[in-house]
Image 1 (tube, rainbow, N blue to C red):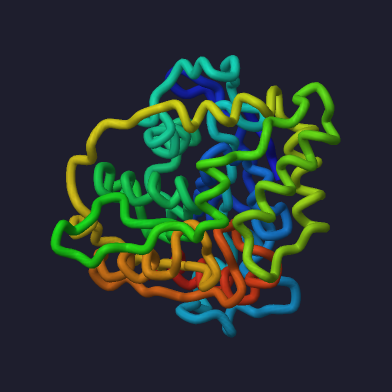
Image 2: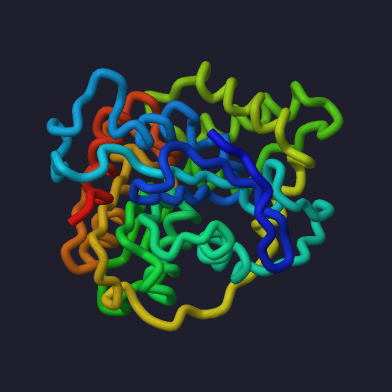
Length: 302
């Protein structure tokens, strides 16, 4: 693993890499307010190694025996998260367009021409936007716990969040005491619990929350993501021509599974894989046996 600060227009982004740069690149894009810690180190290493411990390349769907067995995996802190450049809470110096352009800027800075993009929630939206507006930079898409960034006016109405999930936005819990690391950890764990599926692992979440608080310049700044706006997209999902995998939890309370189905239907050739017991969350450890081989297959050399 190698962690570094990468200068992009208007910010320094903290990125960490796993594996061999000669292997195909997978760039992991987090959700709103999400630092890289949510992409579990063991998950990244499994992708870099070519599969979970004990697996073989030959057992993975779509794998090849004469090509690379692993991947060069990059995870990074969005602006205002982790060790990336942080603005005062309530005063972001960037726009949503900057968040959306940062994956391409990061690839530029690292000297990578084309990558397999994998994004969760907002990160899935950013991945879709990148494939629409910068198609030459995208080798494949893995879209997790997300929804179409461009809706078909003639398409079906998609269900909204469950009442419990909606309440997190309409009547949010009070902010933690930002001066108390333990209180911030408890707040992060509670927020994750509210959107996770029945397979929620509080022990793993607690470890991630502690890592976030330990690494972050200012955890309160992550809420700045909710304050920025973006420009309209120039294109539609019909323009996406790269191999696309849609991974969606069947217990997602924010974007019910119909969102994943609509997304897969909107992109030619996309494939939907439902994850039992998974909510609106990064791939939990219980789903890695499915998610890792699927991501290796979609990113395998042609």
